[in-house]
Picture (cartoon, rainbow, N blue to C red):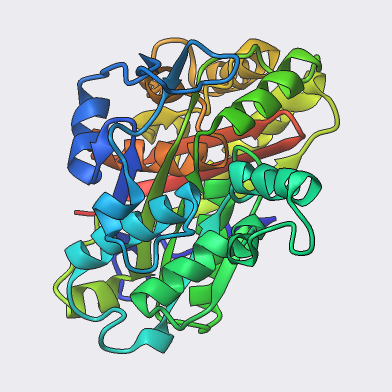
Length: 370
């Protein structure tokens, strides 16, 4: 699947006109950007009383408490993934200013990527259904947390976003897929602006599932530290952004997504996805100023690195390896890669690649906007 988008500075060019993130560096775009630029390791040992499952270290968001951040109203049964998405959306909307939900809520959509929704909520609810006392067994107020689209729906309700609302799940490239889907919504006139990105929570339940999946399969990378976070981007036309006083920070030049059936074929598929995205964006490898690979580790990561080395050479351009700084953030990984690309402040084209052991590979080209 390929999405062709205008790359010039015209009013119809699709641009990122704002972004925000919650990450192991803290709440907001600035702590994230500072951490990325300083290449600061945000993967830490467990706090006293914290359960990291089989891991000794994790990239957890420091001191994030749902009620402290969002207040007590409406948060009694809110799961962590939903709280991260609601909080990130709120920060982005506040920074974006005019021309969003308050003026025309039906013109603003949301595309949010996720792995499974809240793994902890799903497993807690299932456990209660087996152990709970009759006749009710479970707390019905917790059931919505088990649905994959809870975070996207709750974010839209909380912030009065009444445009299209979509949940995307596609492994590590989920954030790139969400960006591509949001672009199609805009190009087809379904809305005028979209908040898009992805979220992943850390929990002991997710840690054990990931650990078992990785250690029991040759397709998956070694069981390294996990992370969590959420990154959201405001995607709209350049003309609309400027009309509301927002300065575009990057334009979406091209995206490309392919599949592979086994790890041995991943290198060729990643190389093809990257090359075709660059060709569609009318960008040569020599013009690319920054690479942001998924840094998957293990055989899969080695093949991604080899594909990029074949295309660009050993020395240039520099590579931002975010996973080593914040941990494996699952479905939120690619969105945090996108945020890292923006935080790095490259003045030329940037290539973001992502590869997943289940057989998905994606590449996105961003252009810095003067």
